[in-house]
Amino acid sequence: MAASIATRRQALAASVMVGGLARPALAAYPDRPIRWIVGYPPGGATDLVARLLGQSISTRIGQPVVIDNKPGAGSALGAEVLAKSAPDGYSVMNADNGTLIINPVVYHRLAYDPDRDFRPVSLCAGIHILLAVRADSPLRSASEYLARARAAAEPVPYASPGIGSPLHLAMERLARESGARLSHIPYRGMGPALNDVLAGSVGSIVIDYTTGAEMIRAGRIRALAVFSEARLANLPNVPTMAEQGLPGFAAGAWQGLIVPRATPDAAVERLSALLGEALAEPAVRARYEELGLDVPASDPATFARRWQADKAIWQPLIRSLGIKLDG
Image (tube, rainbow, N blue to C red; front, side, top):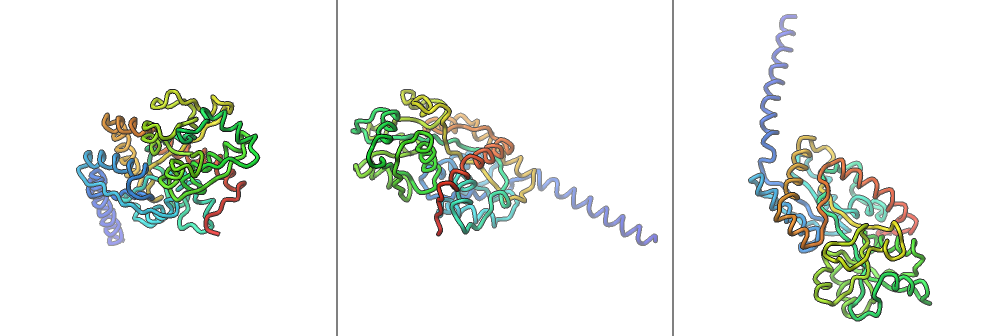
C-alpha cells in the first residue's frame, strides 16, 4: 500500500514537473520559423497579403515567416497540405471563400473538409469586386449594362478568373437577382481574363480591385459598379450595385488565417493577437489602402461567424447552378 502511494506521488510530481516545463515553452511560442501556406502562385492578391503580414509578424516575433506557395485546384492543394500538417501553430494558411466554402461543393473529391480539418484564427483581408468594361465601351453604368443584358437577343458575355470563383458566383447572383442574361467566359486566372478584355475578345469582366486598380488608373478599363455595400474610397465616383437598381445587393471576397483543427487554443490566441498587431501597423494599413483592401476585425469568433454566414448564402447557390469541377 505504501509503495502504491509512493508511486502515485512520484507520478504526480512528474506531471507537475512536465507541466512546469511545458508552460515556459508555450509562453515562448513562437520560437522557431512559421510556415505560411499560400494556395495560389506568387504575385497575386493572396500572395501579396501573406508576404505583407508575414513580414510584419516576423519582425515582431524575431523568427522567419516562410511563404510556401502551393498553387492548384482553387487553393485546394494548399489546403490539403495544411490539413496534413502538425497542429502545433507553426503551419498556417490564408484561406479564402473558395478554400472554405466553394471547393467543398464544386469538387466531388476533396482531400480536406474545412469544418473537420481547420479552425479559424482571424480575418486578414476584405477584397472588393468590380464590374468593368473596356475604356472604349459605350456603357457608362451598371444600370445600362444590365438593361442591355435584359434586352439582348443573346446573353452578354463577361470574363472571370475561373468557374466557381467568388467573382464568378457574384455575377451568377447578379444575373439571378437582376434578370440579366449573362454568359460566363471562364479563364485560368485573372491575368488571362483581363488580357482578353483589353484585346477586345470579351466585352466585360468581373474583377477584384486589387488586380484592376492599375488598369483603371491608366484608363484602360472602366469600372461600372462596385459590389460592396458602400463606395470605395479609391473609386468615389463609382456607385455600388445597390445604388443602380438592386437594393441590398452586395458581394465580396475575403481572406482569413486558418490552422489545423487540433492547434492549441494558446497558439491560436497568440496568432490572432499577432495578426491584429500587424493589421494595426501604419505601414500595413497604408499598403492595404493602396491595394484597395479592407482591414477586417481580427479575432477567431468574427471569422467563424463570417465563414458560416457566407456558407449559408453561397453553397445553396452553387448547388442550384450545378457547378462541378472534377466530373
